[in-house]
Structures are given as C-alpha cells and as structure tokens.
Image (cartoon, rainbow, N blue to C red; front, side, top):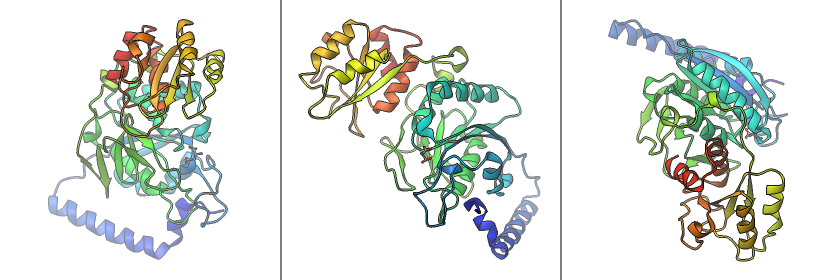
Amino acid sequence: MSFGFARLAAAPLLRLALGLAASMAVASASFAQGTPAKAKPNVVILATGGTIAGAGATAANSATYQAAKVPVEKLIAGVPELADVANVRGEQVFQIASESFTNEKLVQLGKRVSQLSKEPGVDGIVITHGTDTLEETAFFLNLVIRSDKPVVLVGSMRPGTAMSADGMLNLYNAVVVAGSADAKGKGVLVAMNDTIDSGRDVAKRVNVKTNAFSSQWGPLGMVVEGRTYWFRTLAKRHTTASEFDIDQIDKLPEVQIVYGAGNMAPSLYEAAAKAGAKAIIHAGTGNGSVANYAVDTLKALRAQGVHIIRSSRVGEGFVIRNSEQPDDKYDWVVAHDLNPQKAKILAALALTRTNDTKELQRIFWTY
Ligand code: DAS
C-alpha cells in the first residue's frame, strides 16, 4: 500500500519540473540579495499517531481508514519540502488514536516537550496528533510548558493515502510555524488548514471536513506558502506566564464530565464522584443550566467535597456566574468560555494547586 505522502512523488516529471523551478527561483533570489541564506531552524517532530499517521485501503477512502499506522520517519520522508524550511528530526512518542489519550499520556508528553524546550539546539517543536482530542492536549501544554519557544500541534482530517490528503501541507505549515521566530511567545499553537489557532481557543467543530478546527474568538494568524501572518494575540495567561509547570506535576486529579440535556439522570453525577472525580464538569444546556431535579444531587456532592464546575454544551459564548444558578450560594464554579473538555483539563490542573472554590474561580477567569 503506497502512503499518500508518497503519492505526489509518483509524478516524477511534475516534481522534477517543480524542483527545477524552485531551485532557479532560490538561486536568483539569493543571487539578487547577495546574502547567504539564514541558518535553518532546528525543529523536533514528536509523533503521537492519529489520522495524520493514518492509512486507508484506497485513495477514495477519505473517512474510512486506520489511524496511527505511519511512523514518524515516513511522515517526514513524505514531505521532502520540510528540509527547505527547517532541520527536522522525529521522535515517536506514542502511536495511538487520540481518543485513547489518558492523563498519564498527557503528563508524559508534556514532560518530553518541556525537556526539549530547554535544549539550546531546539528552536521549535511540532506534535503530530489525532484530531479528536488535539484541542485538549494543546490547551494542557499551553498551561504547563514554561517556554516561549513555538510548540505547534498538527493533525489531519484525511489519511495520507486519500485523494487531496491534508496532512502533508498541514505538517509543512506546522514546521514553518514552529521554526518561525515570530511564533515565539504566542502560547501553544495549532496549525490546521492554513490557519494558526491558539491551543486555548481552538476546538474541533466539524468531524468530517478539513476546516474542522476553529476558535470562537478567531484565529491568531495564517501560514501560507512558508510564511506566517499574525492578526491577534491571546488575551489569557499561558506558558511562561502560567502558574502551572509540568516539571512539578506527576499526576492529575480525576475530573469527569456529565452532559446536560432534558430528562437527566442525577445518578450520573454520583457515578462520576464514585469513579473518583474530584470535580465534575456540568456540560449544561444554554448558560450551563442545571435541571431543578438535579440541584440537590449537586449540592450534596459539593458538601462531600466534590467541586461542581458549570460549562455549557453550546459551542460558543460563555457561562455567566450567578445568573440562573446561584453559584455563590451553592459554592459552584463557572468555566467562563471554556468548553467542557477544556474545562476538564483546567480543573484537573487547578486541583493540583488548590481546593478552594474562590481560587478555582480565579483560575478559570485567568486562563
Ligand atoms: N481517531 C482520530 C484521532 O486519532 C483520528 C483523527 O482524526 O486524527 O484523533
């Protein structure tokens, strides 16, 4: 089975023509400028699996395939143009579909990123990742990596074996961003579909299109033909300004999510607590609303020491404190604009530092 990344190479005349044109362009440009090309940045690619490492049976299989099959060396070999923009080396950290990530894997990946970020010879880090939980990993790293070096997560919506596979260009763009000095200090980034989003704001909002990822507050920038273009910066604290540090964290407290809808079963919240949750994210309807027949259950769990954090199942907007629910009275926390899965990440980290409700709420306003 030929991997899609090599599909383009199967058109040798086309690539030869493109190669000749490119080398003539570079020669003329450097001749015209008379200055040596600047040293290429050193970028490490940490591979964890996902569709970007996926393989399907035929080129028509854009949605039916096996994730986490192609090793990092093949990913890199499938995009020879990476060598034009950076000195790249790869490490295979995991080879899994990202729905199978665990807290332990998050911590392990975070510690490796932190280690690499401290190496003087590393200018930027790319993490290839499944798209399902990519936003969770990106937010987690945005909170715990105490470095201003670019850390860029990237995935793909189609396997490399498919027609119009998006992984090659996504990977190229991610390496460009990770090697860009102007990407420093912007927090952990996600490069998908030519767009650069903040790891804090971005979410997977479509599960079958290449424009799957977006941020309700908009992207930070774009990357087009090897250049980055920036339009905003993140308003919230991150990376070097964060109070969280992966080098001080070995284990994350358990936090679980209960999804809100009509006709809820309050026993689901009790089951989450029984499973060891130290906080429960209520993915409520609307403004994080709680069914009147579930309030007593949540109050009882709070009295047992379990924190209740109101998020919303609605994709955009933010939960307002003390609106329909008396959060002060019940000693609950609101997740601000964070979706339930991101609130879960922040709650777990916050609980490594405090169990105080007011402190938890400050953390949710801050990050
Ligand atoms: N199962 C998905 C994952 O690994 C595949 C993907 O979209 O990357 O997240």
